[in-house]
Length: 280
Image (cartoon, rainbow, N blue to C red):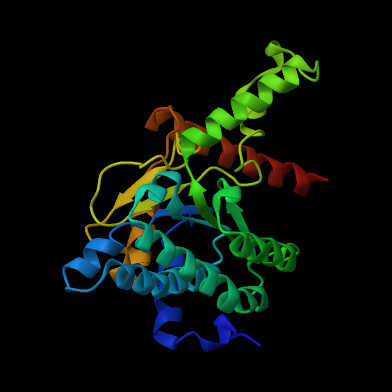
């Protein structure tokens, strides 16, 4: 049996989470560009793979913290299609680490009610890794807690092009007409169709770019950039990113005054409903 994350949680960490929850509404979906593993290792005169190995410890911490907080979705950018261009030894090491993670972590994820998903061109991954992914998804498919999605051999442009190809095929087959194509219909062809759009995107290592990650989905996401490398990004850093998110106003193209008016109108409608209910 894997550890129960709620039982093993330290009291001071519970207090930190309670304080955080009292500040506002949590992001429902957090996406993370886990960057800086190689530089973390290089600065310590270690092989780059040592940075990736230490990065797994950060993955464990952030997954646990997300589950304990009650965040619904966590998506981690683990390996891009472009990463296949890296030195073969590093790629091979990454695949071995991925295989090890899938073998050793899935039982604990399952015992903590985590649903495991993947997005990306999985056919490019080693066959044994593909089998482990399929097994993990099947094992955790009915879990109702945190949905953990690993982006593996993933590219936002690749997924968009893939969606366009599928739509074109359905138009050719007469399943849909061009007039049927809306933003919602297009989104349904993406590999992320079962996920809500990310509320918060975190990027480590200080880089100010998306690196081909969820290009369609992050149109209105809030961004949090930290100079820390991913292996150094742990619970308190995660809490800081969520606190930053909670302090922002998400307008989705509207003005601040519009949002205030809508909130005021909603409150007035609720009060009127209570008054009417009491009259009955």
